[in-house]
Amino acid sequence: MKRVLSTLLLLASLGSSALAQSPITLNVALDKPTGNISPHMWGVFFEDINLGADGGIYAELVKNRSFEFDQPWMGWKKLENGPEGSYLLLNDGKRKGNKRYLRIHSAANLKLGLQNEGFRGMGVKAGAAYEFSVQYQSAAKGMKIHVELLDQQNKVIGTAELPLESVGSWSEAAVKFPANQTTDKAKLNVWFTGTGTLDVDMLSLFPVDTWKGRPKGLRKDMVQMLADMKPGFIRFPGGCIVEGRDLANRFQWKKTVGPITERELIINRWNTEFSHRLTPDYFQTFGLGFYEYFLLAEDIGASPVPILNCGMACQFNTGEVVPLDELDTYVQDALDLIEFANGTTATKWGKLRADMGHPEPFHLSMLGVGNENWGPQYIERLTVFKKALNEKHPEIKIIASSGTDPEGDRFDFLDDKLRAMNIDIIDEHYYRPPSWFLSSANRYDNYPRNGVKIFAGEYASHTTRPNGPGKSTWEAALSEAAFMTAWNEMAT
Image 1 (spheres, rainbow, N blue to C red):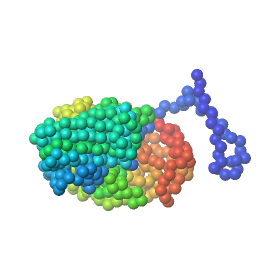
Image 2: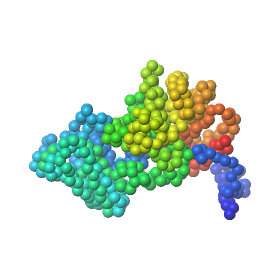
Image 3: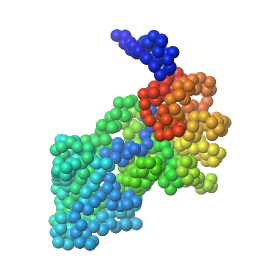
Image 4: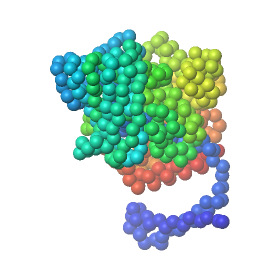
């Protein structure tokens, strides 16, 4: 059956002359496409911003589960103080990645406890099952952990008891229990009973019903929304998060793979980025690391598009660059990532991928070098990356940055240089007011049809930019849609 969508558009915003015109009727024949659009034309961009990963799609409900925040007690409070030495934070330099842990000492069968506030509260559902787990060692005989979920009125809405075996080395214990009430502001009490000394770390609470039932995995509802969009690709992990405020704070993929307990937490660069809304409790635990990103892409049928640091920190922050004679480490990270994604299990990084549960390759075909970097210092570093990648992995398409703006001297410089380098794909970003999007619908009419491809990595229409904080409105959404028609028109 022919489907026709008729829409009346009242163009009141175009001025008084438009009001005198008759309404415009658009007839759209949805069953008669006039061109073929690649299934990889549209995708999604994921960055850990606004609690997108920790506190978002990563289903962990406990904030600062391993006491590794700059303020190790952030997110926690002691329920009973006890005598001096009842709670002791230890920093063990021999432990990889996760050095801190908590020692509980109960000399006289005290009831000691902690409370965790979660990420602005914990969202739990009535009837849903949750799993509490803990890493522990040196448990004295008879020691137990009691866990409680509380609502906003401090009413217990779920509880469980976890007896601990007497062990001398780090072990894990877990218990599942249901919540009997729905709330988005729950908190977790963890009580320790018995006499003796107990070391604990990685105090964790996850819903049992995660995406694809993977223990301690991603939120099922949020991933399903991504899957329902049927994206052709997923760009990760950023964004500005790739660059970091300085190079020490850059995203380093190798620190996000391997055992969860050994992944080294860092501050999220959005923690202090906006002075009008500081988020001092915003860190990256990397429970959602590069392995999980690749797995997510595979799950939802999207091509992975990872972006790596090119040896430059965010140029709006410190603007640090690594000296060219020290760039080898960054280039090797790119080569090793390709091995992690595509290498056989006989290789070092391919074996790690297999050990983590995925012996088959992830079929990586594109790799971004840098994000919103600009200037001759970027071209110098990109040239080194391109030479190494082309020599060792000519099958990988390189995505290069065109800076922060879609026009101006920076853009023109990069566009000329990147085309002269015969780079595979240029990443253009657009953060502009609606008027720019509407006037730029024909932007690509005169772009070359051969050679360098264009990747629209980030875009947003904001009614108050560039002179103030951006806001999303119908005007902004419609201007983006108008601009997107240009992308579809050029999809061939």
